[in-house]
Image (cartoon, rainbow, N blue to C red; front, top):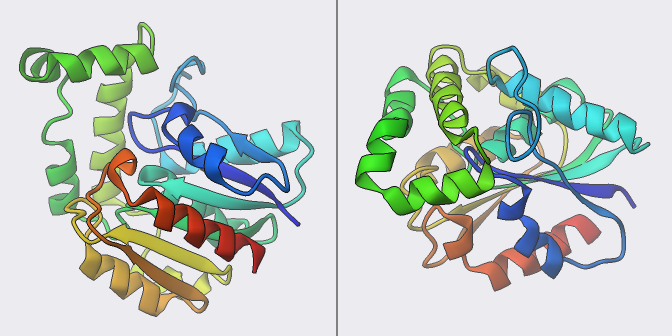
Amino acid sequence: MNQLILLHGALGTSDQVKPLADKLNADRPVHLLNFEGHGTEAVLERPFRMEHFAENVLNYMEENSIEKADLFGYSMGGYVALLLGLHHGDRIGKISTLGTVLKWSPEVAGREVKFLNPAKITEKVPQFAQELDRRHPGSWKQVTSKTKELLTDLGKEHRIKDSDWSDIKNKVRIHVGDRDQTAGLAQSIDVYNALPNGELVVLPNSPHPIEKADMDLLVASLNGFYIS
């Protein structure tokens, strides 16, 4: 059985998915990692890019002697997981996502980066600023600014094009909340239909934040998915 790696979302750290990891069946190693520049990971002299985050995962696998891994990605982490499936399918087993924006455009990116302004976050939502500072000690403003640039770039040049979905041969299970205004049910259905081995699970009464998802149903779905 493949080892399992859980990937966090934008502005997050591995702490974001640790509660989920603690609930999954512990019959194999479950790994958590931070993307570069997140948490206590060094901020490299390069922009945030999805392909760089995919590289982080491959490097982690090499450092931990993981030949092949199943992946779960929340939000941005799900896009990284799918990008790995597209370009490194031989190293990746099953892929599952939650709340991932799958189709990008300048309009989608503009919506997502609207509030990614450190000064406005500090002024309008100081509690969130404090939480970001806890996650990324001394670097949360840089993480926020680099994430804004990452998503703006992704809107201009999405890394998985509509014609690419059919090239992802991995078994993929997409999870989306019925109240998720970020990922959106319609695009999740479109991608599910385009994937050769796609599956779709809609979580009831679940908005975008992972901590507000129907965790019992999500855990049951993931345990069944990875074991089957």
